[in-house]
Length: 379
Image (cartoon, rainbow, N blue to C red; front, side, top):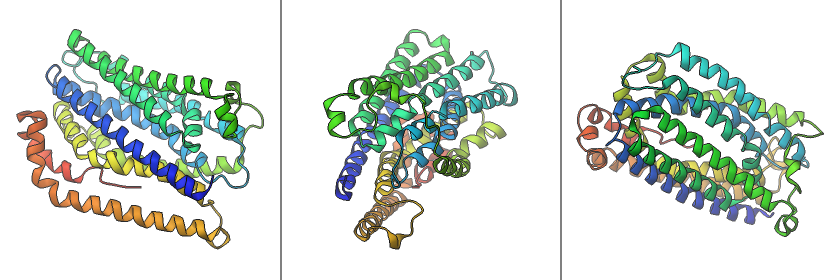
């Protein structure tokens, strides 16, 4: 694939990802606005802060390093069997992290009042199970992302998110007394749908004429299972390097949730309000910055070869990468300046429209500066 084709595919992937993130945020927006009418803000705080922190920490620490390493430059003749073998390590790594984190969430952190927020202990286990289910799709996700299967990610995550929202709405209306079981079941449905979509797609795709015409490196579904040769040690070393960096990135990404969870600086009700406002404040970052990061990471990994001196690489590809990077930096800087100018001035109005007095007054009024400050970062 030429550099121009890679750039076109990366741009298309970024565009679809932007649309996907818009849909996600709209659905989450409507879902939060709906559930606030049926469940307490304390319950929302436990789910969106404590349980989702468990989920995101487990998933991120288990797969981020593998994704970065396996999506890096394809130079020196990549062996996809070794890459797939390496990616399957995400699941046992996730199991180890799952045991450690569940023990912390059960026995170290203060449990919520079982009268107002029931079923906390099984909910922690179910969120861990959902995270491990999502990790099973990791080899398929990396294969799809590396080969620019744009529609697959959009369709899979869209269907999974819609299924999660439907389960949440139905259970909140019909059985609000189930408490945390509602959101645990919805998260398990999300992870299950995501895995199912990837598995069904590759069962249909592998061995087809389209796969043969694209010279896809995997020809049968059984080739996606671990096999010999086992591991590429150079790639494994690169993964370990990214693994050490992922700790710092996770702390920077979820720092405020760790503070609220481990230091108990806010009660669960205020945590719920904080998280809702935090999600509003991160809309632009997740709409634009995250899709740009994910899509153009693949572009730079395909155009430039990691670890090789820039003078020994194709100069036309280096020039193209430099131009693309310059345009991306100008774009995100312009977006950040617009947010800085208009964000805080209209934050109170946005909170009042979204959640009424619950968010625009009291604790919500205190946290409204989050609409300007949170998650406006670009890696």
